[in-house]
Length: 68
Image 1 (tube, rainbow, N blue to C red):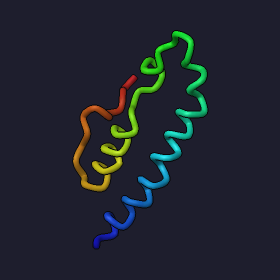
Image 2: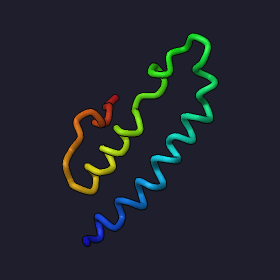
Image 3: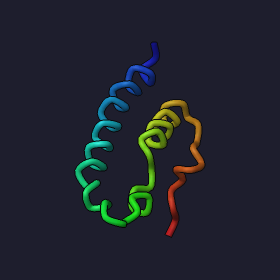
């Protein structure tokens, strides 16, 4: 098992639950007509795919950084 694969699982185990915690904490702000999709850009699956791509070295086009 490589160092990258040893690091990937703990990173996912920390980041994904933390992301859902943040979404859950502020979810009540989006109820009552406001579109949650307008304010929450990524689903947990998107975050997971992005983290996996970091460890694999494959770029994820949908997560490209916006340039201002």
